[in-house]
Image (cartoon, rainbow, N blue to C red):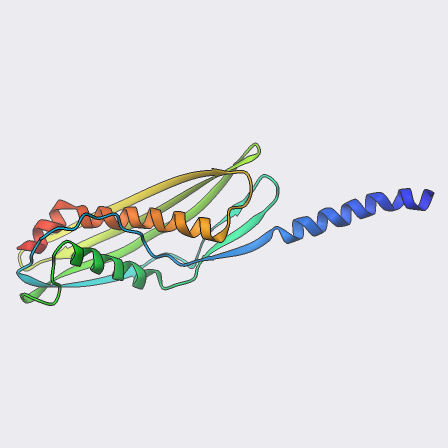
Length: 193
């Protein structure tokens, strides 16, 4: 009976170690911004070239919850390619025909400067802050226009969110930022010249 009593603390320690060991994971997320854009009937007189580059590392952050769960957040797709496709789709939904028009072509350069997922534990809840920032450089035949766009989403949770939940929220914050770029009246006006 005495030997059984001395085993209880060891079993509890082993079980706690097993549980905390299982709480480490990696969430691989595909970033495909979800646009909320009204279609329009805009037209361009010059062709439009769109290029996108990224200054963002593949690991964009991690989650540490109050109950010792941990997940690294890693981008699983080509971020710049995904954003470039969404910018082109957005311009086309506004009515622009990128291939038609005079030369020299207008050039819209998009640079992804920030995509981060940061968490902070407050009591039994975890607060996650997601930021996505873009810079645009539009060069037309007569003008040059530069602007920055940023969006932030804050979530609170008690346990580790699923990979699907995190991916959805990151796509929302990325979509808000790309939508801001596409709704910029200066971008729209300059592309119509």
